[in-house]
Image (cartoon, rainbow, N blue to C red):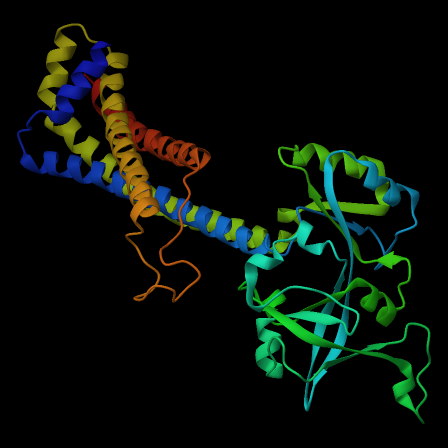
Length: 409
């Protein structure tokens, strides 16, 4: 242990001639600690909500989605698309068709997003895990069936296994509107609601209706086309490696997206909110470090006699400056370390026991308690900002000491 560090530790914990200096030093440490703890906890809560939202989207969003780079559809007869069935890493492929349509139930109607899916759709999605009512199946020898979002069900006042059919209308792609008989410009079909799903995301719950793929292909005149390919990989497959290989194989005509990229806007907004909150708390931390300046300045004034004694014993300007720089660094370091440990401990308590709850009663929200997930990269970022703010706070009083006292002695 260096001489400057030994003296700095003694100055920090020893009793000063004025008790206010001890109090200000403790306030400085507590200010840094509390702000560091708040940073850790806040960032962890944002991570928890991001994981929660990702888990909700993953119920319907495929592991990998291939869409055309331009236009609305891709050809299922494209050799590069057909060859994907031979890839060893791919467990299941489901071509899907997504287009807007008009849905009518008795005397109620609404625009919906019609999604046509093949028979193996449950292999590429977790549709069965999000059903509120009914069972997921697409068709039999008698009729076609639809799985509808809970928002659609509420608005149309329809549920699983209702006896009246749903009617769906889509405009014919190549037909011209005949004003004398405008109904000829639309394709029409009927199906029965067999299940209601909910993922607690309005873009799905309030507008999506899942129907058989061949029915959607007929309605939208897409005989050998699809809006996208939804892909599920085999377990323990390197997803990033497969995405890179798919992008290279398919070329510039197609875009290959993972779940995060499929909901890029939502996750980008969450990241922006997270780091904006980080900057706001960092600003509060900067204000807290002003206490370090005050504490160190008062300590320098209190230790004038000690400074003269050290100079008489041969201590040079650099050693004395290093003592008080170390003193300021210790205040920031102890505060940061204490806050980091406290923040990690609080995150662990929240994970294990859910101390901070979202509602008074269980089941009021998707989760009962605030979700948290601690990332060590966040902890390093917090320590970095504390260090960056702590060093200037210690440097300023020491600079005043060198300019005003040490060089005039």
